[in-house]
Length: 184
Image 1 (tube, rainbow, N blue to C red):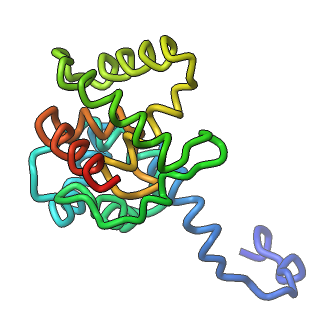
Image 2 (cartoon, rainbow, N blue to C red):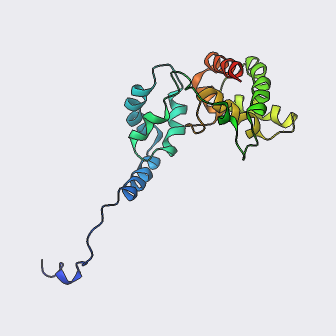
Image 3 (cartoon, rainbow, N blue to C red):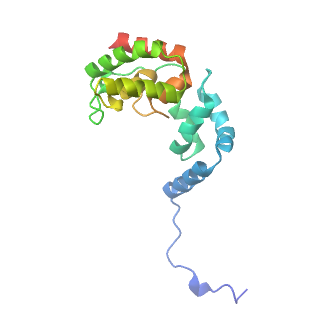
């Protein structure tokens, strides 16, 4: 034992318990998990927060890179059972160049567009929105940022507007869009 252990090599500085470093290490392990394993671990937390049918595989694909610890899941999902009350100023975003007024314009464009949408997958909804933004000579965010706010009532969610639309389904998405327009 003396050959492999030498007390002179022990550091004199005390050990530090760093919870931020532990969270970062845990986040790296969570992100490295296979999707099926993350879904298995996340399901009890999703069950505690969401009481409606949603696309859980898509939700988990969006949650996995946004979680440091599994307890981070529940607070991110508080809007799935119903949109949280929010101020119209939430639509204001300097980077996306949106205001409550432009958000109303964007949602008015999105509603008939999404009502006519047949393929309700994330990629199909995104492509439809992208094409409309391009035709309007606007950036995607100008159209999609208000969609995410209207569907969640939050500025930061697990996934963007088209992801949320795909997770919630067509009927719920359209109902939330109509309610957001009525509130504006």
